[in-house]
Image (cartoon, rainbow, N blue to C red):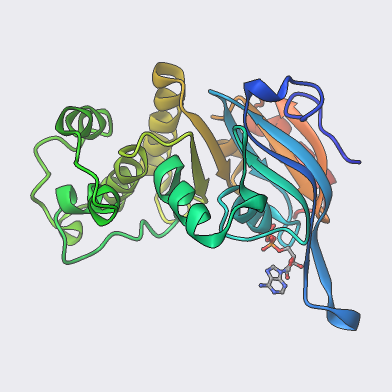
Length: 256
Ligand code: ADP
């Protein structure tokens, strides 16, 4: 079994973990063309932490994120969100967990262009037929710095502002965990760093759990800890990382 120190399922009481994989293997395809993207991975993400996931292209980062988000089912092993075993849920129950307990932030924002900022942020609860908690909405919008822009359309906003709206949309359901897939990949350096500072603030001030896949050592240095993947396996971890140490580790993982 492969485990990693700080974020490992066996080093930390599972009650303190927001999410965890237990012996997860994910193989795509069968026979000669089968590709194993994750190999017997056991790894936990502490509650209230900001964790970055890095690794060379093809090392399994997206598969890892999709498994935690319940977007993809492992070939074997178990995936937990808190005490809920996602890998054991039927599709309808999994959809409800994804909608209500997991916030997802994409590289490409994925906002609905025909909807206002307010409509985008409240889309998920409205689709689920849930009332929108106006006080919480105001707090979330304020936190991401989008107060006063609620009636704008996405095309009237900069890329950084659109990503802030996407983060507000992810937070509005008060998710157990926020998963981000290259959230600064489409932003210039300065705007990207503002988004990273926002993640940092959300973790520090609200105790939200954030897990982010990135290929950028500077972006990863905002996290409490960086988990490295190589060839579908955890390949070490840096706690309180600096961009220099992350870049150095990546070089040794074969990323050029
Ligand atoms: P990363 O995000 O680190 O680039 P991925 O998780 O996307 O890595 O991919 C890990 C491996 O699994 C790669 O070899 C990739 O080609 C393979 N893979 C990912 N998704 C699929 C898929 N849907 N079908 C077949 N192979 C896949």
